Amino acid sequence: TIYYNNTGDGNANRVWVNDTLPPGVVFWSSSVPPASFSGRNYYWVFANVAPGARSLTITVRVTAAAQSGSTQVNGAFANYTDQLNRKMESSGAWANFTVRRPAIKVEKTASPSVAVGGTIVTYTIYFNNTGTTPSAKVWINDTLPNDVTYLASSWPFSWRSGQRFGWNFTNVGVGPHS
Image 1 (tube, rainbow, N blue to C red):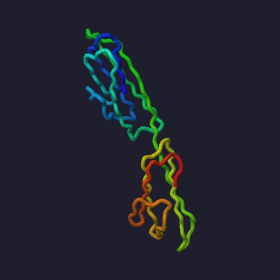
Image 2 (image 1 turned 90 degrees about the vertical axis):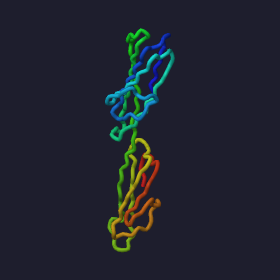
Image 3 (image 1 turned 135 degrees about the vertical axis):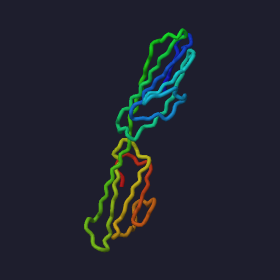
Image 4 (image 1 turned 135 degrees about the horizontal axis):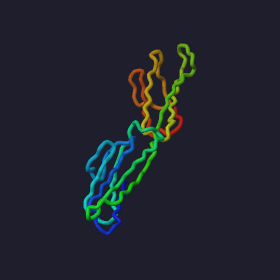
């Protein structure tokens, strides 16, 4: 949210608000449509701004390329002219946020590691969220070898197609899971 405040006693003839988006986000929407934009820079122009406080809300979406732990620095600047169309002193402000992402690592083990016909083998699939925030959804897909028969699993599978099985998990917290 960008706040701009005419603290004077007369109207500002024109107010220009310029917002430069950080590289880890893309413009999604704003409470007032931008007058124009160029690359990562968005511009709004307001006419005859009376004394008082106002705000402009800009919504952005974090890109897939934004690295977890990166700080996204957003700067906004306002310029204005007075009633006589004289350019007045500009001002700027910054707001930051840090990107947090889940990071799922998977590993599969078999026990025992050597088996003969009729032996029950237990596969364990470990999935560890090593990120800094829960994952909204995790899909685990596993294909069993043709020479084994599925008997059971500690979690019911979400789908099955022959020897292929899938499990869907929601809100997977940070830490180890299996």
